[in-house]
Amino acid sequence: MQMLQRSWTPLMAAAFAVLAGLAAQPAAAEELAKDLFGAKKLPAVAAPQSIGFYSTGCFAGGVAIPMDGPYWEVMRPSRNRRWGHPAMIGLIEKLSRDAAADGWRGLLVGDISQPRGGPMLTGHASHQIGLDADIWLTPMSDKRLSPNQREKMSATLLVDEKTHLVKEALWTPQHALLLKRAASYKEVERILVNPGIKKKLCDTVKGDRAWLRKIRPFWGHDYHFHMRVGCQPGSPDCKRQEVTAPGDGCDQSLAWWFTDEPWRPAKNPDKPKAREMMTMASLPRGCQAVLDAPAPSSAEAATYYGGASIAASAPAAVQPPVAAPEPAITDGAGALPASANAFAATPEIGIPLPRPRPGN
Ligand SMILES: [Zn+2]
Image 1 (cartoon, rainbow, N blue to C red):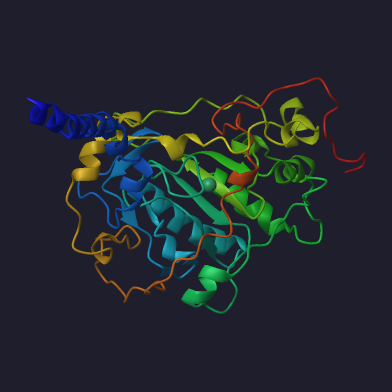
Image 2: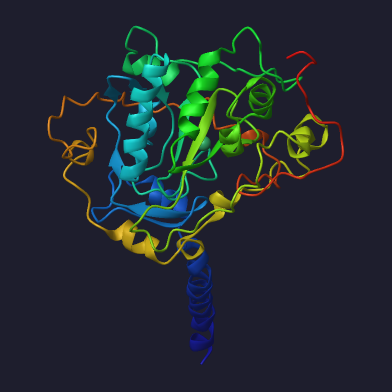
């Protein structure tokens, strides 16, 4: 009897430990979506389809933009974020040609999406459904960048961080032409730029100003602009964003950016961001199938060459360096207040409008 009683204690302790383990299991086993999607090196082989919203979703049938094109170079290749919906990739390639004709030597292509989209391990809140792309506001130079330079080259900040105005010495008419060209495509619904850049356009663009409606002020975006394409045919579960307000946006909503309010430090700077906490349950149901779908044989097999058959006349892919350094630039995400929202209208308040000087 005594023996039994004594042996109960460790047994019960063991039982409790097992129970406690079971209870803790669901939380521990619920993997974060950023880890699951961040681990996918290749896209989901399926018909192209964006599922969910720009900041909560994923996509199937992704293709990669080649590391090099006649008028583009992919930057930060080790991040493996050169993937997108074929419509997005085709549009970047088209923009590179059109911009070159406008006098922009070539595009430095920043982050597009992970191979299957989804939340990222670092940076962006959006870029999740293959319909967002960052393009540097620095043109290609006449010499091709080495893989190492693409990882390390710093971007040029076009905006003064104190005044939030464009640095006059760096701004050129070609910057405006590039943004105008990007905004001219019907697929492009929004272009996010720093408020200083929006103001520069408001103050200087003459003639046709309708395209300014698509140019939207947002934090960061002072070394690159962000091009967002609308939901594409064949994506019934793609969630559209709000329609932008009518007008050129050179109004109180822009003036708000030149007050103190948008630049106050975040009340809770260490609060985890939404994309850092998302689980598969936070994403649309279709994203599990995207995660589970088979991959192509290689990245090359899913690389998009100018709208011709994929991987038709494939040049040798540039091998990214093995070590992937932590990105130096994170889309200005560090500076974002918790309320930051690139999908909604900016608040309008009654303060004087930014206007060009008389005579301009
Ligand atoms: Zn972006």
